[in-house]
Length: 458
Ligand SMILES: Cc1cc2nc3c(=O)[nH]c(=O)nc-3n(C[C@H](O)[C@H](O)[C@H](O)COP(=O)(O)OP(=O)(O)OC[C@H]3O[C@@H](n4cnc5c(N)ncnc54)[C@H](O)[C@@H]3O)c2cc1C
Image (cartoon, rainbow, N blue to C red; front, top):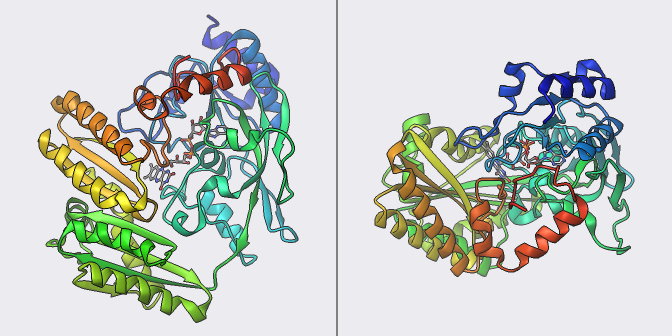
């Protein structure tokens, strides 16, 4: 085992003194990500490379010595993906934060991985272009982290998730080899699709050093509405009915009663606390069609039982409607000392079954549950709120939620990934394919240095 001091010195020689941090305060600060359960291990060293070349040097050095490397963007992940487990080197992309080219001829953008998603969106919007993936963490999470997690967000109902916008990546493999995967051309079937294998691989197969992302024209107009339902099953049914009626909103976000009450207590924005379900619906497109689109979505909600509809007539009213959804995460942490946030996803028509089943599981284990999220994608954040002594009970409830989700032909993670937190549950969903995933990992990273202990143990 190499000491922190010796490792720090070697890395300083390789990439420069100012890019390497070894003090306890730096190492502790980079031991966490957004996972509420806290940290597992402390890195030996934290480095801030500024180029692909720096990363290639770090990886080939670490690979020769079997030292773990943990790629890190903003550290907003919710499954422990960027958190080190056993010493090693945290490689932060904070200093690789330049947008390199906005390619207006081909509707694309070439970017470094440490660019914050919101910054990229604002920059391309200045040219009338649009980068749709919008994880709720978009104001601080990075493009590299979004790609490594295949992040989704409210707008993904209409526009798809991060993978749908990644055309080409520059990556560094575990042995330090720099390579491009994918193509800037709209089509390419040359060889295996390594690009899509790396998207969503949570930093376990390659380090992303550049990304060429697809852009689309910025929609001309937006309309936003809030629909309020006395019964939760009416809201769930409205989501399923919307797609059956062939209305595809840009976003369709759901809050259950516990979310509504928590937000109202926290933000005092006039939400009706009698309601058991609330949908935030947004449509976009040409000015000529958006009124008709939102009207169709509203009609579906009314038919499903909505008793109140609020529509935004300007940007400040739109912001007020979105506030209901954005305030959920800060609001619910006030409810109990601990929470576990899952992000199960089911085919949209099964949302009513999922919501009903989750409430039954919570009742069986006598736990408080808060459900909200990207219902238009079938993706619900199931949050168990609990006291520290209830840990074991929560664990059993979570397993049951996962088993139930899989029985509805859904997935245990729609967007947060597996990290270290959910790896014990992965076999429930992927079965025998797990061994094939491990074979891919061994082929690309034979010394298991890239984010070891994440997704599965080898
Ligand atoms: C309040 C809140 C709301 C959220 N909402 C959403 C949401 O709506 N949708 C959603 O999908 N997620 C959401 N998330 C989760 C998280 O923000 C996303 O997973 C995001 O994509 C992580 O980006 P990051 O830059 O913080 O990455 P990090 O947390 O730093 O890293 C995430 C993973 O990516 C890997 N990684 C990072 N950079 C690279 C790179 N350059 N090369 C290779 N691997 C890399 C890391 O090793 C790690 O495994 C939310 C989180 C919070 C705290």
